[in-house]
Amino acid sequence: MIYRFEDFSLDGDLRELRRGSEIVAVDPQVFDVLEFLIANRERVVSNDDLIQAVWQGRIVSDGSVSSRIYAARQALGDSGAHQRLIRTLPRKGYRFLGHVHAASDSGGTDDLAVLEQPGAAAAPDGRPSIAVLPFQNMSDDPEQEYFVDGLVEEIITGLSRSKALFVIARNSSFTYKGRAVDVREVGRELGVRYVLEGSVRKAGNRLRITGQLVDAATGAHLWADRFDGDLADVFELQDQVTARVAGAIAPRLELAEIERARRKTANLDAYDYYLRAWAAIYRFSAEGSQEALSLSEKAIALDPEFALAYATQAVCYLTRRAFSWSADPAHEAAEAARTARRALELDPSDAQVLTFYAQTLIYNVGRLDEAVACLDRAVSADPNNANAWMWRGNARAYLGDAERAIEDLQQALRLSPLDTTIWIAQTTMANAHFLRGRYEEALSWASMALRQRPNSLSALRVAIAANALAGHLDRARQLLGRYRELDPEARLAKMREWWWFRRTDDVEKYLEGYRLAGMTE
Image (cartoon, rainbow, N blue to C red):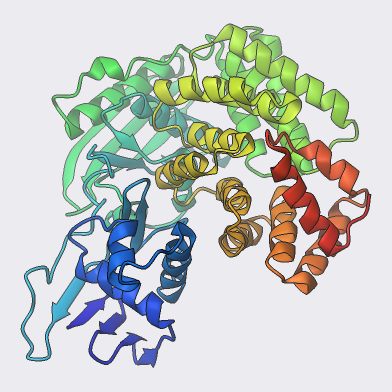
């Protein structure tokens, strides 16, 4: 049987994998794994299935299976982050997702010659899935981009409150900003059935929001509408768009589930400063973080009970510490704790507030169990909040529960596969695999994170230790040199300050890697 998918062909008789006319070199066991996944693409294949088929039932570790899956993905230009062709289903196994044409030597096709790509119509758990693309700014003033982006983010948050929908996170949707896109391509890249597009025109105190909902599988327009009102009605207009979209996707949904978020603030000037602060945060620079602190402080001055403005400050302080941008880390750590705590006092049910507060629990004081409990509440309040899933995975890794951490991280990556901050989840995934002794897998994730964010100290920390323990000492020493350029005070004693690992063995594993790389006390 010859299987053709994308620009690949896999010939079972010749035992060849080709991309176009070029042969792709793969290990025999990796070829067997790939062939078995494709041949059984109509179902989920478990580890036991693979061990029986490829290893003829011999006793092998789960790590051996994982390493072959990793190699198969590499051969296909896939990765654990994107899972374009090979999807991992936590605690269940793997499934091949490609659109396959299978033919025998005689030219006949098998019964599964053409498959719809799983995930295009629904999330892995069966819910209808949607991505909200950045709206066009139709105002005369290009400075209003931040306002339009903030409005779209509120619509995404509103849709996310429905447990009946699977909503792609803001940071992945916004990778399409400023690009002419084909919604069918967006649907394939993000794995969603529906795409919402639109525009915003702001003229004086008047607003006009237009939206159109498109079936990404067919390109058909399902719904389009226009919403006009005063600037003072912006929150009501957002809610109208959200409710109409949800109703168009699934008329039987209880729209009460998309309950109106507790209104952030009644002061529109404070709301404006809040939106500007997040625009500054997304620049990921020392200057941007300082600007965001100033803007959020202005928002708080106008509305001292604006919970998300306090939460925004906490994020700024944590980011500055993570990148060593702060001249007084101890003071800013205390400020992060203070502002996050105040946000929680003001709005203890908001998923974003809970997530930001949990971050301070993890990195400021190491109260991991409390952080997980906070993030459980965040995920329950908003099951589409990719950050909540990601930070819960982070806390679970510190607690020593690496496998459940990986499950949370896979869900975060599914919710936001093109996230501009994906390097955070990739770093955490690298950490989880490192703790399980899967050093090559850890290196793969850490390398992806460093490609996205070369100055990430956290990704470098994993990469140095994983390279050292995997035997790649030259590379470990090279990365340690890069780390010292970013943090000249790097010492083993200082490294211990970064972690809140529950298990001493986990700390020692990292320290062993650093010693091998040449770090001293």
